Image (cartoon, rainbow, N blue to C red; front, side, top):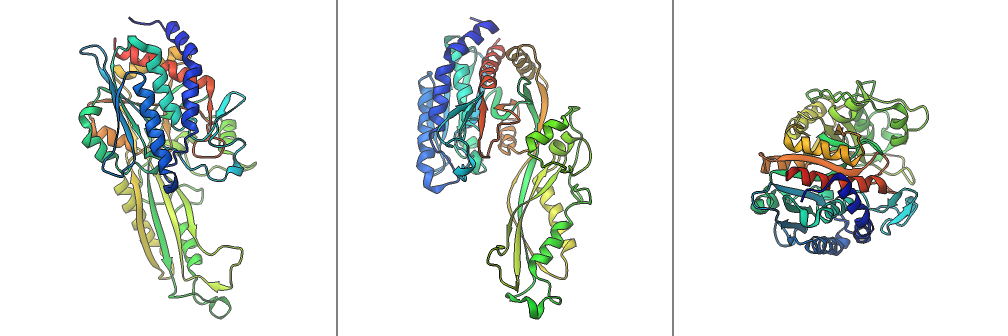
Length: 448
């Protein structure tokens, strides 16, 4: 039976308290995959996720690339004979919560304040799991497609074993359409489909100028210290206006979307009077141009620093690379630039930490038609925009490579004030309800 939009909305409204309770139970599990002391919590969240889908009639199991690898959940619920197959993706691991003092509410005790539910993973990405569950429940016995699951347990630590999992379980994951619920919407009340994401490279850059530390009074003014040399080198990475100065990095155009100045300032937390860096429109700078950031420095601390010349200093250089570029090209371009600009004969050492490929999706075809119609109905007539994302989800490139014939839809529950990865991560509850409705409508339309 094909349900009307109003029928699905009514079902979601009736089911929503239970969906929310399941989400809150997941948030209470401290599944921080980057913390070795909480790996048992990652196992616990995998078991909870498995049980939630098993209760909805899925044949589901916890799988690993090898013994001791992070746990993922793979499952299937069959639809009518000959129906399309849809793979639903989310991840059950979360980022570290860091300093609890930065949170207004306990990070692992879901707390409603105003129109949001706060807690680590409340949005990224346990709400993705809950949205999948909610859509399945809303359709119930009227499920018109075969649904397969892949709920990952290591997304927040770079999905190291994902390629092995995709190869090992390809037969259980193969689908006509893949729905990746790990992104967000344009604004409260305005849905979006994510059609491009930047990739990234991270490179540790070390400069050495001396064999050991020496007295700054005796040698200062003659011998360059390593911090001085590193600062000079890092400064060459940007033009005067803050745009990347590394030759060979790719840039491209972005969608014709206006990002209001007041939103940019509010969402970024920019201080009064701060000037933006770079060239082009705001969305080009954030979505389709490279961005270079220093995300870490190794040097003596200010407190307790002695009057010595530092022999070595190190920085982590992170580049978000635009769609159309590649990690290999970006690493080569950065390395060439650094070697060219090393000051005063310092000794340069670089180490590639990791890379992730950018993506640009072909946002056309029947699956995208169905998604746009579903989103428009769920948001009461507001059509979704095609949105780029400046961040990176490197595993999407892995899915595209493993399943080249599938249509990949990148959706999500986040909004501009979600604060994923930061303190006070929160889920807008009304938007979450719309996301559940939209996914149920999407599954129904894909089965027509």
